[in-house]
Amino acid sequence: MGDGWTMRKMWVGAGAAVALGMGFVMLLVVGVYLVAGNLTGGAGGGAKKLAKGSVPAAYQPIVQKWGNLCPAINPALLAAQLYQESGFNPKARSAAAAQGIAQFIPGTWATHSIDGDGDGDRDVWDPADAIPSAASYDCSLASYVKDVPGDPTENMLASYNAGAYAVIKYQGVPPYKETQNYVKVITTLEKSFAAPTGRVDPSEQAAGAIAFAQKKLGTPYLWGGNGTADQGGRFDCSGLTKAAYESVGIELPRVANDQYNAGPHPRREELLPGDLVFFSDDLTNSRAIRHVGIYVGGGYMIDAPRTGAVIRFDPIDTPDYFGATRVTEDGAKALPTTV
Image (cartoon, rainbow, N blue to C red; front, side):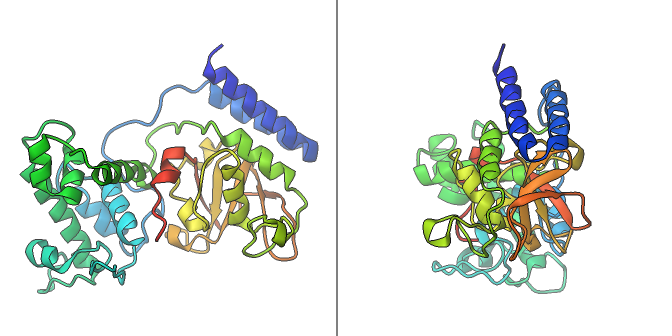
């Protein structure tokens, strides 16, 4: 019996614990996992499209269009760069004088910017110029290193970080820790911005995260709560999900809209216990997410809902259901801490 059977036993065990609090959910949890355990195959290849709402609606058409500018990039990769650089903030300004949603420094902007919207100017603060310019710059870098062995996208990203000369010199991603980390971060984040094309593999830590949340059932909600002793062990919604995954060795960001980018996004019909489920008043923009819970199966989650309530089971199929994330260790590690 292989790892798949071990995981199914963990899942069923987690479901059994849930059943102590809500018996009818248990039957559905077991059904979900036995079906999932018999699925085969992983995420497919092919052209990447953006996951639902992963890019703010105002920028999604631009990212989708310009992300296909050359073979070395795709919309999900371009979105990952923008998120890493600015968190989709068109007014972002860094201590190193990088500006706008794509964080161009003035010299690079002067040399590589384009008039993306055709209005006669090149404005670093206008995403309609800055996003196309970022895509164009990526493609220019890719052309500089097109004869270098290895993955063209990784070589392009390495050129973005260390310069094309370094990539040519070392005939691939140079042995710089910062550059190697940059390439890994962007290619990992890419998965959280891409619409799934097949089954999303379950997290090995999912059962442990559920077990943590189950132990907190009945605990009063506290806005800003992280479960510390001085807070009486109380949580808010994202404090609970952060602590649940921290208990199994995965460090998530503190706020829900950043937790959404901690892995790929299963469809509603593909949900498995342990997935994070998100809710928003704006279903086109993941940056507007305002609530998160941990899915336990059968259409229910454990969540810390609001002031005056306790951590409890709640249904997920409500009009403000936004989507889900299957947390991965690499995905969580790739998330920037400053967006």
